[in-house]
Length: 565
Image (cartoon, rainbow, N blue to C red; front, side, top):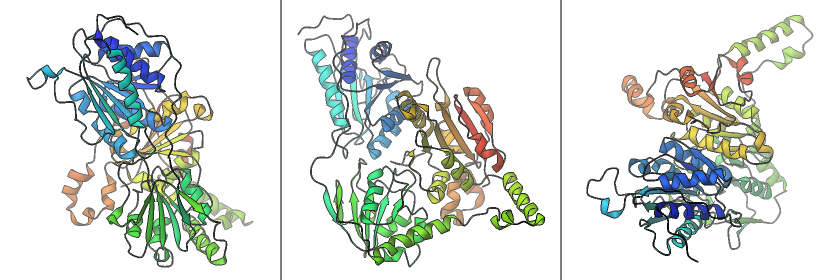
């Protein structure tokens, strides 16, 4: 088959490339503007006009990449992020690293100068091939199209190779880089080809038989970030306690042990563990890696899409792509007691909190009822604590919603106290950085609310600290014509990075230098920040205002909750 020559081979190639991505099941494209990438950008706009893709435009490449990351996380489908040349490509690196360590199918398509313009001081020209180092599943450096025979087929082949590399299997999923040189003329009008029968993208599945796992005394199941519901099912099948982090996707069920930190530190619980089965990537406690590194504990890690096998202290004995439980749960008295002690003790620890005296409420004595009323009123007027904030956000979030947790003290509060509930929780825990949290959440919100089904009516809530907000404040910006999802950004504002107060450095460093170089307090009006970006703003002064402030709105809302250091 022959193809007509275009006045711009760049546009001809770009149209063929993106058309093939669409045929292979890619539906979401994020781009930032630029001259060298104009053929790709205009082709994407034409595909959006034809209803073949969902296009998002962001002026900041770092935010664009994390937006694409959020779309890919929620849809479990490769997402394209398109940039021009130069520093634009470098700004994608944080999101590429997160995708690499979390196993997210992110496809970078960067425009570039041709080789003859590299290394001679040409404007906006740098060495883009290899710019992301080893943080890729595959990298392709494509020479500039000039209209020669075979370039259309080459474009389609490049798209197919990128999709295959981004999602070959569940344990090799990750980012891919297509770097394409373009020469003038950089764009021209090129009609879209007729729509072809699309391929429905199916997330890759594991091949081969799972490793059998038998019943054994003293077993616990650990669910780290991204573990999924299989961890909860495995714990039930084994009759084992489930130590599930809040962003694991397994923080629910009858075997859940929320207070796992405290119990792992207790002799009658933690020291009786003999075997650990790990799903996902644990990142929120020191107790889990300490447990695995004990010489008397045998650990099996079920591999995830994360690029590195979880192996604290190089102490893991067995790795498996998947497991299957053989036999029935241990229903002996000893087996039931093992699970029961963990679950009931954890629940008892969670119930130890400052709450009104129920005995006063049911008393017939007027003085008791008055005392109860005073306790309730005092509770409503009390400042919001981190625990109260995390619990309130968890309480109002339901299965049709999405919850995104930033890398701050608040995700640890949720992990310590949030009761079991089967909701979708996201967090960038591949490298646990604070960057891109709002952009990632925006991608998650747009994806979950653009599809038919129950999530279309949900709200996405983001719980983060003030530094995490300020680090990604640019992602509050929605350009003209860009869709604005139902999104709540809930900021626990304690005036700096108080997570460092929990580390050993807080006990040794002088207070002044500690505050200046680590705590890094900032003075920003969150209310004016919201106004500048056109967001609704809410301020929570006390616990009595907390639940009502979390009521969903049809417009993006920034909720500020002052917290004590």
